[in-house]
Length: 80
Image (tube, rainbow, N blue to C red; front, side, top):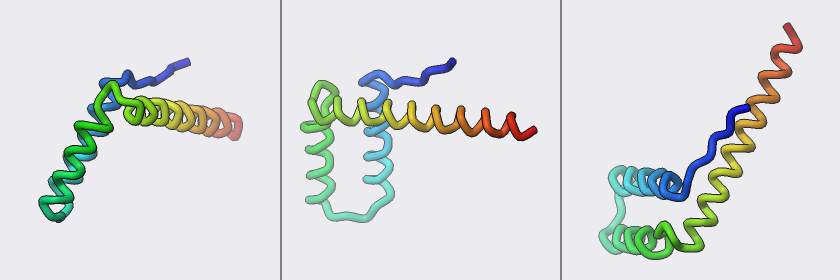
C-alpha cells in the first residue's frame, strides 16, 4: 500500500505556490495584495496553528482521494 503524505514544509510550499499564482494572475488592488501577503507571512507561517490545520486537511484529503481511487481501481478490475 502506498501512502502519500506531505510534511508541514511541503504543505506550506503548496499553499505558497497557489497564493503566488493567484497574486500573479488575478487583478486586484495593492491593498488587497498586501493583506494577502501579510496573511501568508503571519497567520499561515509554518509553525502557526492555521497552517497546521491546513496541513492536516491537505493530508486528509489526499488520503481520501487515494482511497477513492483505490476502490475505483478494485471495482474496475472486478468488472473485467
